[in-house]
Length: 555
Image (cartoon, rainbow, N blue to C red; front, side, top):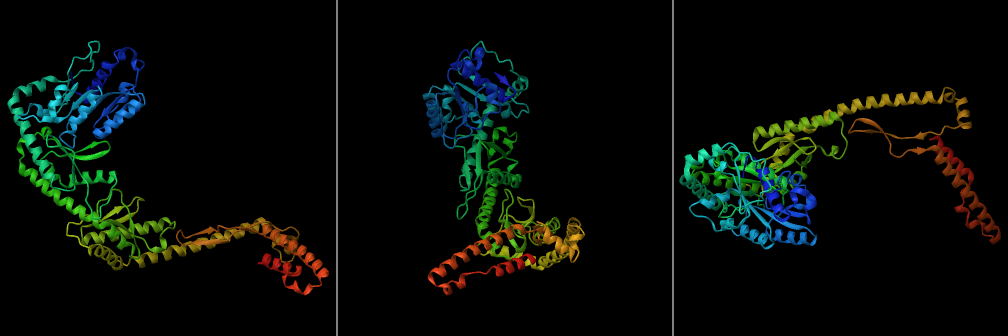
C-alpha cells in the first residue's frame, strides 16, 4: 500500500497483525480480543497508536535491547497478556547482530515482525550486509523512497510478506505516486544504486572517525547507512549529568558546529526522551557533492569542541569551591548552562533573608554591570539568569588550556572586578537610603498605632488620677507585641512571641498560692520537729511576691 502519512501506515500494519490472530477484530472490536495483545517498539512510541487501536496503555511498550525484550515478554505472558508484534528500527542499533537477535527472539515467540528505516535501502546496494538477510522472513516492512530521491512530499510504502485479509480494505490509501514514478524512471536503478553505495561509504567513514572520540556514544553499527550518535562528556573525576542537560548540550554542539555540520545534513533527532545527532546521507540532496574531507573537518572540530567542554566541566566543581571562599560572591545555577559555572554578587548580610523589591532591583543592576565589565575584558563571561530569575554572571566554556591554577584565577578576577566597581559601597549607600525611608515610615506607623490605641481606650483612661483608678477597677486585657525593624525589607514587623498580661498575672497568682501552701506545711513540720531555723531560706514571703508582680506589671 502507499500512503503520504507514515503514522497511518504504521497503524494499518498493526491492525493487520491483530487480524492475523483475531479474525473477528473488525466486526467485534476490542471484544474479539481473547487476550490483550502487546506491541513492542524498539524506537519511540507511535503517536496516537493506542487511540487508533483502542488498546490500553499497557499494550504499547518501548524496549531497549534484546535482554529487555526477552524479560518483558516473559513478564507479559505471566500477566496473561499476548506478545503480538515487534517494531524494529534498522537504523538504531549498537551492534551488527542486535537486529538479528531481536528478530530471532520475536520469531521464537511466534510474533509478527515489522522492520523500517533507511538501512533497508542497502538491500539493493552492490553489497548487502548480512544483517539485512532477515528481510526475506519479515512479516512487513516500510520504506520511504521519496526521501532517497529528494522529493518534498512524503512517500511511505508498505510491503507485506503475505497477502493481508481481503475483507479489510485500506480506505485511507493516499499518495501522489506520479512524481515518485517519474523520478525513478529518470534516475534509474543503476544511479540509485550508486547513490546508496556512496552514502554507505560516507557512513562507514564517519563511524570510523567518531569511534576515535571517547566522548561520543555510537548507536549505529558498521552495517548502517544512517549514523546516530550522542555526546556524553568525559570529566575528571567522572560526573553524572541529567538527561535534560545532555539533550541541551547536544543541541548546542550541533549549533556551534553548524558551518561543518550543515553540508553533511546533520540534524537532531529524539527517541524516548533523549536527543541524538543523526547523519542521514540518503535524505541529503547534496550527498554526491560532499566528500570524506568534509567528514574529517567536522570530526576534527567536534573533537576540539568536546575537549574544551570536557576540560571546562572537569574544573567546574573546583571553581565552585573557590567562589565559596570569596566575600560577597556565591554560586548560583542556570538551567542547562554549559560552562565553568554561574556566580551572583550578594553580600553575606542579605543571604537567606526576604528583600525589598528596591533591594532586589539594585542587586540585579549591580550584577548586570559586573557581568558587562567582565565581558568587556573577556568574552568567557556573560550575563545570565539563574533558576530564580535573578541576574548573574555566567562563566562559559574555556577554549584555552586549563590547569589547577585556573579556578582560583577566575574567582580572583571576579572578586577584583567587584572591588574595582566598588559594589559594596554602592549597595551600602542604597541600603542606607532605604533604611532611612523605612525608619520614617516605621515612626509614622507607630504614631498611628498609638493614636488608634488612645481612641480605643477612651479619654478617661488616659487622665492622670482617674485613669489609674479605672484601669485598676477594670483592667484592659490586651495582647502585648514587640516590634522589630527588618533591615532586609525596611519595614516594621510584629514580634513572633506575644505576651498576654492576664495570663502572666494568672501564673504569678498560681505561684503565690503554691507558696502559701508550702509555707503552711513547713510551719507545721517545724512545730512538730522544733527545727524551724533550717527551712527559713526556702520560704518566699507573700509581700515579696506581690512586690515582684507589681514591678512586672508596671514595666
